[in-house]
Image (cartoon, rainbow, N blue to C red; front, side):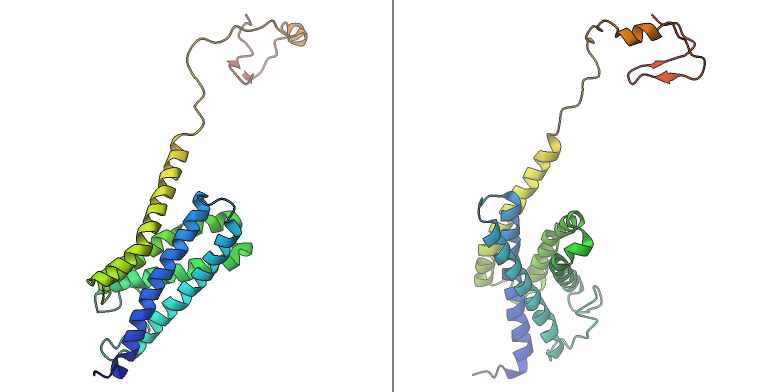
Length: 228
């Protein structure tokens, strides 16, 4: 039997990365369920589960990256696991993981800084969580040791496909919302006939002030032009 001790750091990092992807996918799904309001009356339960999954995702990401420092094969430095495009091993896919990791960590922790960030600004920032998750998915499929294994793809599909479907639903609804706004006011056509002038307007009709053009709110009237 092969002694796993020399590969303990790599095995731990591998398991933590898999856990991070599963947890992040579940957190994204719950967040999208809340935003799309597909499950009405379950907001408090979903929010509690979402927050727990988000924190668990952060822990898994930290373990995934930190344990790589002890791997005897890669021998990565702290800069390799924390700065994009520094690692010499599968640089592109590794960089996707670095960006995704930082994105999920910072956006997840930003929830606790809403008081200073502002609720509206925080909601806009939080939308990038889905992008960070997609980058993490790309990192797992491009660099993951088990990416080509059927069991890995099957297990990931169980949590990724629902999240992708909810994300597509959310984007579709947002597109319809921005595309079907309030109808534009009519600029052409026949105007309604004007009613009789108000008494005050009738009294002021003979007064012709000299000066610049006056704006009535509808048509600019020159002070020197005759009134009809």
